[in-house]
Length: 393
Ligand code: AMP
Ligand code: MG
Image 1 (tube, protein in one colour):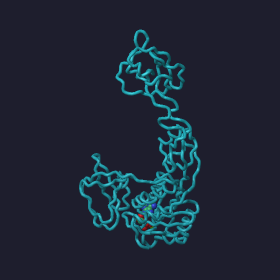
Image 2: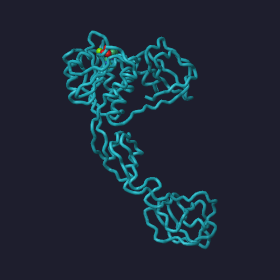
Image 3: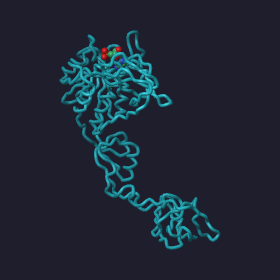
Image 4: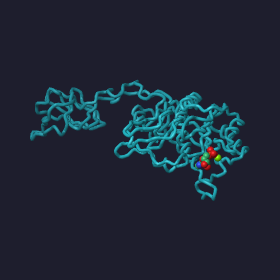
């Protein structure tokens, strides 16, 4: 199968997304979920003209004179008296401003006189009143579908009394590792073995992407065993990620097993580094990725392809932030025929410095990285001081 550009691979993946449907959850459980309805307010916010400072409510035209204090209004209490000429009410932050008053002057700008009256000692700058409905009007839409829910959105839900929300269901994502050399992290690897890092890295990436991971274990390098676990993954999940077994080795069964399981492979080689053997296919019940066995490649291809797909399936447009920063030193690569992604650190002076990196198995290099930078096809060198977009990881 031909090698395709990263852009083409990305569009192929995104255009294969299907929706996993919606469900209703308590707003307290909605953090990191994607909103699937429009939320509107059932009240004006603030619901009354509200004092934004502790002080005295009076008429602006009376600021120059001594005022009688006719009432004290605590937050949560409704004013009983109307303000007339020469009058004010002591008022607390968050309390309703009494009728007749059009300013609240601060305690700090006041002086209580021996007579018990109060005088304004400041220079007028603002009213210190938040007007009813100035933040949100009754019926206003406050949150739109497709939004990734953050703590501040949960505050908005609380303020409009929306305690149940419709969110997209989390895609169920199966994770399978493959390889006879793998042992689980609890075990000490034997002479020819390594620990399975990808499955746990992927499970964490899936969680961070807002989906639900299901780890199905290690498929041994045996066609039948791999086939059985892949079949099970397809029937139980919306998305299947299998790592390893996609290169050109004698025991790389994954592409043939996927086809046997009814997966139509749409690409099996992408012009990127690391992660060239990334494979993607569709099945009526699930979308399937064969990710490279090398942990750095697997990590990066998940971020570049799988994470945006998960977001799309939940109705959210994943737009990675890239921060343009200058290079600390110049950087060159030998060949520029693939798009390259390079782990970098951001120095305390805000400069980008590629980290020493011995290739796609060097997982500890990735753990030091603050982000990754891309070098497009055809670009061999980045000059010292050149601005490059860093994508935080
Ligand atoms: P493969 O794609 O199976 O040829 O694997 C490529 C490289 O990645 C080999 O060095 C494997 O040992 C390594 N590898 C494969 N799967 C894993 C895994 N789950 N965790 C860590 N390394 C892996
Ligand atoms: Mg293998």
